[in-house]
Length: 236
Image (tube, rainbow, N blue to C red; front, side):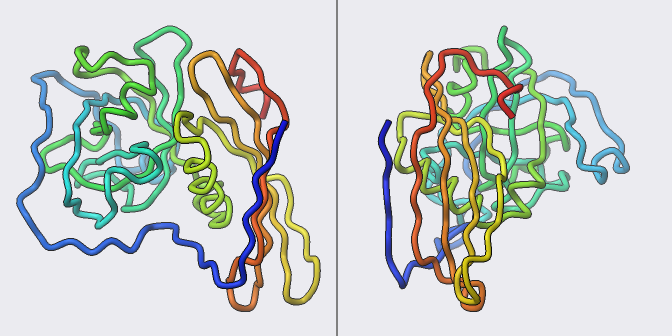
């Protein structure tokens, strides 16, 4: 068991990236002549998990969101222009095609013209992290919005820090633990994450201390709580 600690008074949370790119033609995507189930607008608006399909891409230098495909170790995705999801939003994707239904958390970095609302285009690394062989081309998935993480911006900030600290692992789940008001100028928030690589899964607890008046990060620390071989949603 070990821990990492970051400290600084002038660190600002960079949640959605500050990348500026000139406009250029859209990057090519892999397309497949298959049919996809459609969902009603009301169903989307309730932000419930929906089923659809996923293809993959190697991405490109320019995205419509101004966020690079390399963000969070390429755990990124493009969504339909007709979907309700927004640039920088976090989604959980579950692979329904393979046994075990592996899950990953991805960030929206681009959009795709012509895709139905429940079809997504994952970066190749994210597609493979779901246990899918790129030769499959398309897989059935469940798309799960992450309103808890979207609501907790510091949880999303920690997600990016942990993703950088564990480059060979994918973050597969998260959970808000508590918020503590340490003083008028210090607030502490605690989160737990599950990261996965091969047969190894690690539960990590992270803390971020920030000034609620200025939104400046004061300190970040996280530590491994346990290793386990089998991922189980019951952990949360």
